[in-house]
Image (tube, rainbow over all chains, first blue to last red; front, side, top):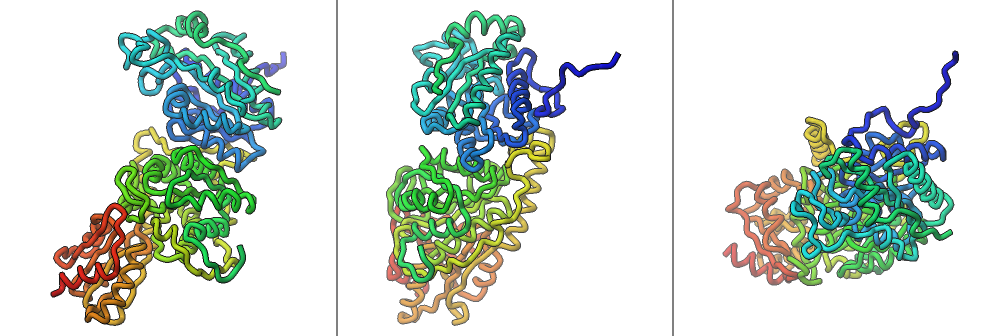
Length: 247
Length: 353
């Protein structure tokens, strides 16, 4: 019986095995992006910007042009790349420490300028790479290595909702929050990222996809438990769905 | 702007040089005394077919320059001292990632917010910049034609070595107007040189990356050694200086850069009438510093006077060059103080009695 290929690794992924922790959402989102770039035949015209944080190693796994950026600066690095190569697909991939804390000015001004690029925002409610410190996105009461008694609103304020906040800017055309906890949600996430990329290709403007992503290692949870935590707890504070969609 | 004689401001000369050198990406943030640069760039750059972005901070400026350089464009930003402090993060990444970029510092008084008067107090942060083992080629103009020429040359230097290059000017040179002769027919040597490392899309090749993060055992140490190899070549081939009145067998040598070198030329002229025969050693490149040439020049004189608009920064490199510190006399004015030629001549007289 002749063998038939029913699935293969996207060309836009290298042969490197993902080095992320088990249950981490990064590898899933990396693959979703790589699949889309294959499907849209954009491998030769894509330039990505990796963040500082766990996903700084994205360039080990993606087989298209990628640069690092200093902590938080990915959106403005992407801005310049897009201005130099306006016909290319340019996206920034950032975590929540990178984007919502140190890079707040960069993401706000890039969004407000309405740059025609895409930002994929991985929200796992903590600083993963450095060992699980509190982020601006950390939930109230969530224990981290710098909030061992749980995030206290009196001292640390409230978890910041980046997607809702950015949707307020005139220059922002599309904002959606997704998760990648099961097959159905991964398919939805892929549709959202595709929409962000298509918006860019069609010159619609700035698009932002927030992905609620697991961090079992720093949450001190088993992967399945972490998945449940997103489904039952995190997505209650950070509601899923399309927040803004301007044609 | 046309060929030939121009009566223009130093800041405007920088813009024209960048455009002529093929710079097609500029990002900048307002700060005195360099505001004419982003102002003129805002229309001049689009006119030349390039991108002008008024960045929302100096951090954003320098990181945009990082991105544009990574994408293969000739890119520049400009600022003044406090803004350059903010850019040090990005400059270190540019050096670590081996990207070509030009950064202009029109220095003002510090520390802190300081003032907006001319100063040379950023010598240290130019020649001994931010975190990590790296260097930045630093060119110090002392007249308007050099504001143009050095900026023009900076783009080729940046491309040749894939390093950040700083033009270290000051508020006086930025605001001053002088007649300069512009030869617009000059073409930058490396403008069309291929940049195989640049991110242009992985057409017919593997994806490539621009990184300074090297986590594998020994990889970062090797990267630093490779950078050092490159810096050795720059030291050997790009060290530049200018001598004034050295064939007149001077008794004394003045070592000064930028505006202080300009004032020191006045000191030499005034000194002739007062029986003080001095020559001038003006480093054109502050990094690489012309240690050997200065050492040789200093052998021929009784004393070396170091004049700076700070409290003693370049003098440390002069001491490294000359070794015999007893020969060295330093006079500096910090915080935006600009010495007069008379004041400097009096200082010399007081030390050679």
